[in-house]
Length: 374
Ligand code: IPM
Ligand code: MN
Image (cartoon, rainbow, N blue to C red; front, top):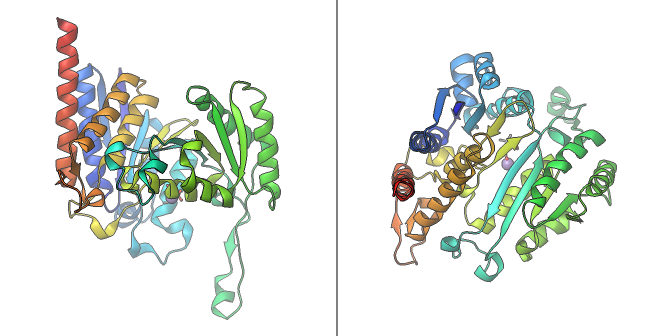
């Protein structure tokens, strides 16, 4: 199989963590007899610096003709004063829209080796395995009208507006993805909305309830977003697939990072469009960029999602996830995961963590292949 990946490393720690993910994907391709081609492109602040825009047309063309896009992170405080549509983040929103993926999958998993990393008690987080399905192309992020009366604001008054808008068709298509995935998991969908206040949530709830009829083996429950924020911390094991609109999903998926113990561990995949888009959930973390402190495991687990959803190499994807668990179990920790009170831990840099995963993975693939040969 041949797979062409556009690699948009972006800002801050983006290049460091993406570099580790690319090395691992390269190794998997080589060992499993596939060809992965990696083509770099600019996005975010680095693209503004080089071309004046956060999503240059060359990047967009590259992404649209690729089989998948692997993105690092965008965000640079130097451009913080620009209006939203000129900032580095605009590049990300534009590419999401252009690629058309509407279902953003964000797994949130508790790792046994990290049970002391979460402020939640181990008995609360043990065995947690949640898959957020965040709608990615609608709601407040893209709804019109949107504007801010800047001139009036500097005169003491001012008004701004964003619009939370969904069509039924937009809800139905993302709900189907959630139910399909739940059917292959523990068969439960929790749909999150604010139907006690918002019309758009009432539409959301009605549409999701209708889709549920197509999936009789999957249980549907509805939660209001405010109480969901609490249940997620109190009883995270109760959730399997969590389906939400764009902004609620943005907020709740960061909250769910508390279960794993570090935002640096969380991967994501966006599916349903012309080209799948893969990005870790964390941001550009400019404060630690270039220090070797960044955790590459979010990007590496994102690479596992590339293997699963774009290369259709489920065994290799599961093998990579297993390898990450083993490296953690052996006590290796990047700075965000390090706990001085725990014995048997080794503090490692971004690239050392990448190498550890790389070595263990290639060893286990070699071992499997020699078993086959016997
Ligand atoms: C995320 C990020 C983005 C979002 C930003 C950078 C535009 O927070 O992927 O969660 O809000 O979607
Ligand atoms: Mn976010």
